[in-house]
Length: 525
Image (cartoon, rainbow, N blue to C red):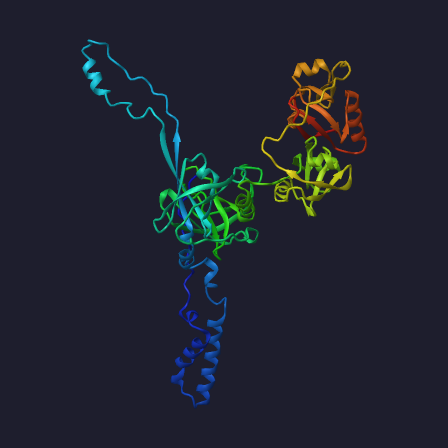
């Protein structure tokens, strides 16, 4: 993990002395102040009554002074930290690296006057460094089960030969790996304690709001048991770190060594696992990121049960719905996830989902954008039958899909063969040079046999709308306006029809030479 710094937590603003007393005592004190006026005189009783009423109103008003004492944050988190610090451990790892190739040392010729000097100067150089060497690293973790289960980051223990959990009381226990998940950078360890360990529990990260106070405890730069406080700066951050990015951003100081440590809310529940920072300097600049507990808890539960993750699998390749794509599909707003490809013989394929469908609902929940769908699918049980609602050619269709299990290195769709008729002369359309797909164009642009049919882009005019959409020579147009095309004539006909219907853009499904598909919109004006 990258590095962090120390955040200064402002204390409460000064509160007038009367505010520090209970209401009854404040009233009594005000009464005593005016006792010298006497109690029998009508004038004194009247003056005393007015003064008491005025002062009580002033000291009792919640906005009379600087505001509520908690407005500037917690005055202290000492009591809370004291109850949690024993559950946070330092993780030290040892890794053996292979031997480095050694550069031969210089040697003077035998009998040279410099031979004795060279032999003496280099006699101890290079010794002991030719074999394998061990390196150590430090991180953080926290106990989630008194019997000895510890959560940390996968990158903290990755490739480690030995993992040691160092507890605040000085106890050192060897840890074994229960399971890991590279997609969320989480790992679960187990130690065998001689006594019951202090443990903490996951809270609900969905309840955390921007501006809420949070506390991080960890092992920055080897300084174990370090406590820092800050706020939730943002939620749902995407860092392109994996398919399920949904980080909590915080300004609580986090540095190298805080990786894998807990981010607590003010109730003492873990709402995040500190994982990454943004730091040009290597130290904290107040931009840290934590895996939310909603994501982590489900992963850790699977690692605990199975030693591995078991995520649902839909079998589609998706992309976002941009404003242009939404307009070309007749959508009122850009939402959902556009299916760019369907894995052959996968769950979606068996249910009849097609490329060009826009998934708008999954298992009864709205799909607001392309980022949410993978998380929804992954969090759903394997083999569950779910309803998936898609928008296809302006109509909503709901299909039943039995989810599979997501596996690394998913088998690619089987190659298909097929050759079209002889290619006619190239034709220019909308800034594109087009030709039918046949043996000649396939060989020219090295198009795989898996791209069985379509129209080949042979040229793209510079600065044209097509160039702006990053269409390149060698791309193959498979569909125009969600209608399959097999010839250049099909493309020109579909584009003309889109223009006639008053559309500003047409939706194209393209495949590159390797067969990877994507949707783009092309201006027809």
